Length: 455
Image 1 (cartoon, rainbow, N blue to C red):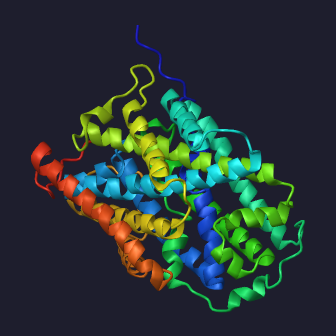
Image 2: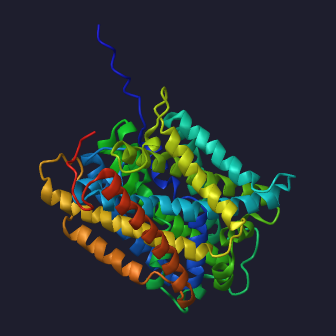
Image 3: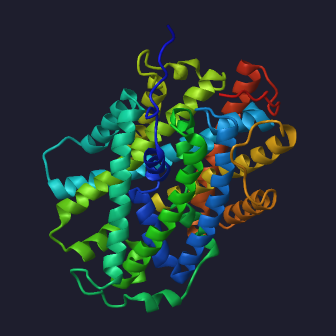
């Protein structure tokens, strides 16, 4: 007698995929970047948000086509290795996905730690909150995607709703505090900046493709995966525009641009000074959403790469019963904690670090677009349940736009050296390690394509 088929309800549905798609983005660093961006650029930052949205939409199209064409937990590495070889696959997965975990997550954890320590005033050891947050979500992800999906859906929707309501209430004049002197939408017309802020605005949308490693665990990926990314980007644009305009209604641009936690200043202006605990809880939820999604997506990328021999074999170890990539989850969990301990918990230089991470992400997205075009040319026979609309114009415009954004990524001259240093050092390190691994361990050509494998 044959085994019964699994129930139709098995797997992740649209809500879980949507929550995973926006999970990296509805975090405190995105709120900080958008609040500081509107302070620096005025209406120009709103234009920068629209440009970043358009580029992100083109990237979402590319990821949707390739992840459904070559469904794999390895995600970008599977696309790039089939198109242009193992070296760019290794380098750009680490630069585009491991690097933000090293740069972005420690900053997020430091923000959460400072807020929770100040609001709750409990006699806890140093770094208690960062360790506790990472340990909790590492455990949840080891327990499996069903647990992850329930937690992530709640986190993402609560934070997205809170951000939108916060901006709408501020715009409607329903906040508990009167607008500060110099605040108001009229201030947004002076000294506007757009081009230098697109990389910062890009942080608001970067990571929408973190849902693609879950393609093999989705109930109906052909229908739900593209929708999750596209509708996620639309929702994020709408909510972020509401939030930044609400912020400018209550606070002057100078304060938004210079404050280390401008999103908390906006929340305090709307909810009142006695809402410290509420603000702390919501900050924790935002940080938890980011940590939870990273620990769901990046370890699956690394485990898929380990299956292909592109990283240490240990990272392919999965739980014998649950099938979750335990070793990769533990490895990725350690990265932000190392960053927190190494930095001493300081929040300085968060802005250039965020922009540097955005530049690394943009380079990964450029490689994804190149991989898409090469796969179209070399493997027209592969199934494509979803196709990029407007091909090849859309990918070409997206690549040109991202190159231009990278070249103009610094919003101020004094940040240029720091951004270039952070990005250059990391990319150089991964380039050397990746090249040595491919030549000495894998014994393959750096740019030797790998035959695509389905499933």
